[in-house]
Length: 149
Image (cartoon, rainbow, N blue to C red; front, top):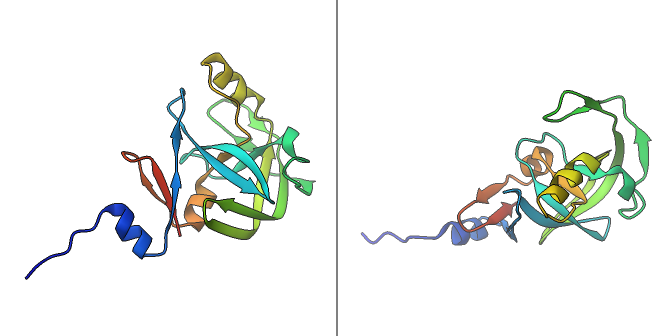
C-alpha cells in the first residue's frame, strides 16, 4: 500500500489554515504584518505574552476606541503596566481574519528602546497567545511561517 507524504504546509493548507510569513529581526523575535481595523502595522510574535498589545501612542492610527482597564499588564520586569482596552476590532493577518476582537494597549516605549539599542526597527505591537489560540496556531520555526485557521 502506497502512503502519501505531505509537507507541513500542504497538510495545513488542506486543513484550511492560512500561511503567514514571519521575518527574523535582530532581537531573535519574528515580526509579522498585522492589519487592525484596516491599518497595517508591524508586530512581534511573542508566544509567552498572554494578550496581544498595541502601543498606546498608536490608538488613533489603528482606529481604536479605548476605555480604561482595571487589569494591569506584567512583563519580564518587576512593574505592573497600566492598560487600556479596545473591543470589537477587525484583525487581519495574511488571509486570516477575526472580527470583534479585543486588543489591549500599553506603553511599548521600553520594548522599542530595547530594539533601538540593537539596531532593530520599532514595532507597533505584540502578537500574543490570545490570537494564537483563536487561530489554532501552528508555527514552523525552520521555514519561518505562522499558520492560522
